[in-house]
Amino acid sequence: MTDDHVLKLIHLVKFSRYTALIPHIARTIQQALETFLEPESGQWVLVPVPMIRKDEKRRGFNQAERLGWELSRLTGITMDSSALRRRRRGRPQSQTAREKRAENVRGAFIAYGSRIAEKHVLLVDDLVTSGATAAECAKALLQSGAASVAVLCFGRSL
Image (cartoon, rainbow, N blue to C red; front, side, top):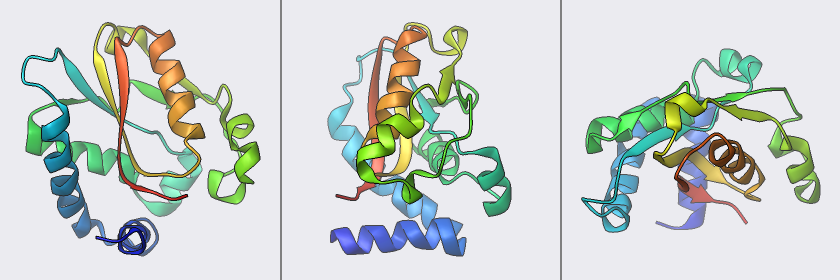
């Protein structure tokens, strides 16, 4: 599948509400995940990147959370959609210049240590562009006691 096809699928889910594509996307990620995870590699937990509440209400769903629930169903890995929250609203990353994205999300997330302490976190997102959001989420998770953080995404936009 080309990068253009991946981005088109993500846009169909996010902006045209074709949520029926999520199970297909999750199966693709699951296949890649099986090569990454070792059976005895510790306690893993899926944690979706939280959306800005206003945007989630407008869209009607958080695509990363839906993707996480589907991955949990397929893999049996526990999903925790409450382990990571947005502490503050920032400007949407898609409307922020690439060089200002890290600054835009700095300190925007808070993780709940009791939920993720000593666990290996699989951070779930649909798309990674600059990596600033994923890095800031990982920082919050690690500071709250996560043993490790790996990012799972369907697409990467350069």
